[in-house]
Length: 147
Image 1 (spheres, one colour):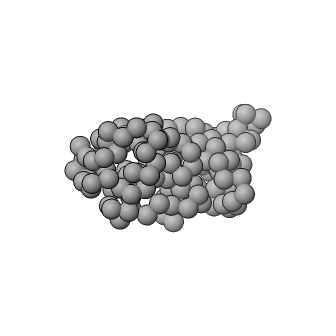
Image 2 (tube, one colour):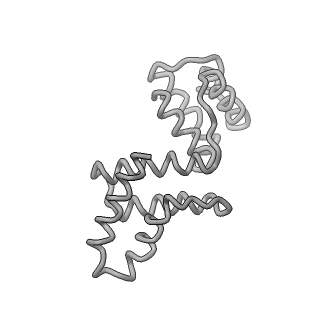
Image 3 (cartoon, helix red, strand yellow):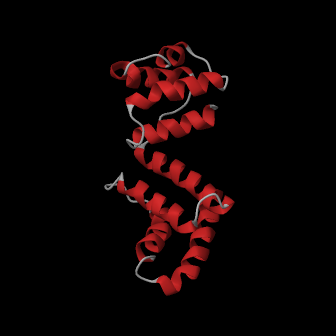
């Protein structure tokens, strides 16, 4: 695990997609990837009661900023966009994943992600338009990656 992947774990943590029980495994992966800090070493064998605090200290020690909820959604949405463009996930699957991310921050409006939400929400009801939705999702994924 590198700094970028640690940033991804931080985003997932902010959105509740990773719990304290997952952090020691992430810490071990980070250590295996060459990252090192006193709190990261402690986190690798921590129990769930102290994992969150040690993770926050690890981020500070490694100078990885903990994202806001909006930043976390955007980070993970860009990751999904890269998977869509790279062909590792289907456009609809990626759009649905992005939509699900926005549901984790219901009080935050993120208009850049509206095209994904629209396509995913209309997919089942409009099978005759799926080719158009696919093209639109891929196009929007490229645009999102460029932002």
